[in-house]
Length: 342
Ligand SMILES: *[C@@H]1O[C@H](CO)[C@@H](O)[C@H](O)[C@H]1NC(C)=O
Ligand SMILES: *[C@@H]1O[C@H](CO)[C@@H](O)[C@H](O)[C@H]1NC(C)=O
Image (cartoon, rainbow, N blue to C red; front, top):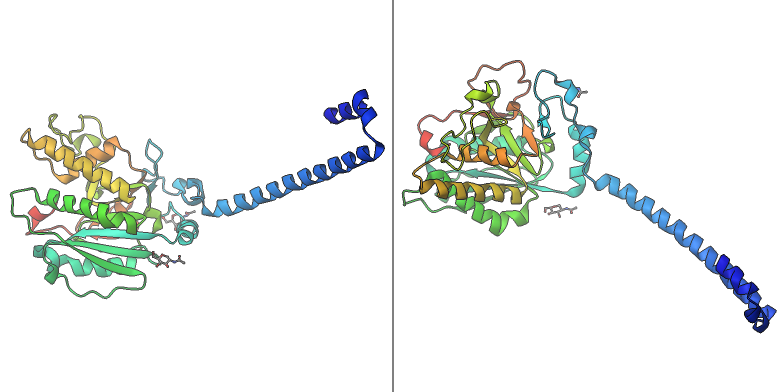
């Protein structure tokens, strides 16, 4: 306004300006003031609309769906503030509102060597078909060395199955490494373009109850049912200090079960790459840690964003303590083919 005042009071300009011109200038000023006001109001309105829309798309805050106070009998939050999902701590409906809108697809990868397909695959897939991410797009990825042995399986709505042929391992390479390398290649070539989240699970499991969106996260680790109830000093981490997977004694957060892990395809890739690096490092030192040791080391260094309680993976023949309220997946101990599994 002071600029305008200067314009009208400056003697030189005053002389040259007719009263008509002054009037026009005044009208123009008034018009632009109205336009500016309108513009700001419109912007504010758009901002509000965007904020409203954004509220629904943004991932719900932890406090909106996670209630740790309900389970004072167990650890519900890690010291790096990651939630541990126990029965009674989560509100699945709140998360469904968010994930349903995103129309996500979740992958479930399983390794199925011919020798154990008959024993486990049907029950694993049939129970997953019923309980794994019900209502969402799901792709089951089956990695096998014998496509002919994979039985015909009826799948529900929104579920598809993809088979990856993994040539039998003729060299004396580690079984687990061989399959994980192929899983890695398939994530790079296909899976990362097809799913938002990916789980890798062992085949010797049966879903008993809904395994839903409360388990989704950037990186997800499974607490080992047996070791959760043991002292930290006894946890079976790799202890040989030369090993890549070594965790210094007295350190380590939890003991994770390699039977279930998940996250974004990129996070799974990072884990697998680290595992292969560790494995190669160890070979030169003549050390051979199993996959689970490498997984525990990975999650010790790269803390998982979410942990699943032992309710998500409970061994069928263990005595069930009162903390285990609701078993989601039952783990069957492997008898004969023990060397096939970690
Ligand atoms: C608390 O947990 C129990 C099961 O353990 C569940 O039935 C109940 O709904 C939970 N309450 C809240 C507020 O989450
Ligand atoms: C949701 O995703 C699936 C699988 O990617 C796709 O086939 C379907 O068209 C999508 N639906 C909508 C409404 O975007």
